[in-house]
Length: 161
Image 1 (cartoon, rainbow, N blue to C red):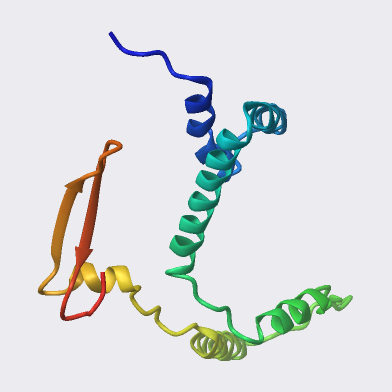
Image 2: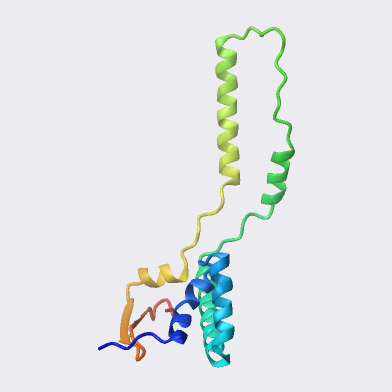
């Protein structure tokens, strides 16, 4: 026969959605009230779990982060400020086919040049991707006393894992 969950175990199970901001405002307020009412030992365990989840998410999110180009803000603000309204002449001008073709070609070449110029450099593989791609990748798994399995993947060639 299984034992029913204790109120403190229920609170600790809600630490992960709380840490990930996956609760509505009402649910969050109710949960915070329950944590305060549960006592300092349960509250400390709850906030330790919240802190651990947030630290883990910070490490994971920072592992593949790339900096935007330094002048991105300036270019965006300049593009927003540009006046995109074009005044059309009252009488359409007559153009020859070769002038239109030359203009289209010039615009195409310019657009391609600008596209190549502002293209960001190819992203470098993250440490995790390098480890998984290493020729000597090793994986070790073990049971965790509290339940579950922990798996470690490492590479001696990449000196990482």
